[in-house]
Amino acid sequence: MTIPALPNAELAVMDLLWTKGRTTARQIIDRLYADAHKPQHGTVQRLLQRLAAKGFLDRDRSLGISVYSPAISRDAYASAQLESLANRLTQGSLVPMITRLVADNKLSQAEIGKLHRILEEEI
Image (cartoon, rainbow, N blue to C red; front, side, top):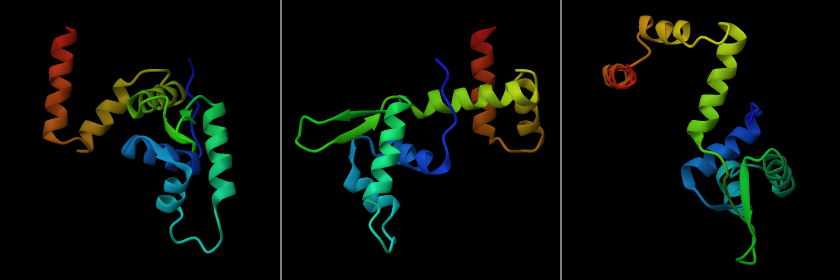
């Protein structure tokens, strides 16, 4: 299954769902649009509809109100986007990307240690 890249507004909703778990549309509005000067109910409903159509979220109507939860994990999304980026930039190889992160000191010692452990397990 191909996982499409999300526009920023949809990604903000998913980030909230990944962080908070089961959430209502009202809770999404309150968190993402707390400072809005006009109602954002229609905007959030459209975002939720698009995310549901793309298979990103589940909708539970059993409580009388709709409660939304992520249908895919943050890790699954990140992995798919990283793979897509590697396909576009480095003919599918993640090595140049990882090498660049290490060389530019973008990874902590703990993260580098985790990479070592993963590589040792795979060998």
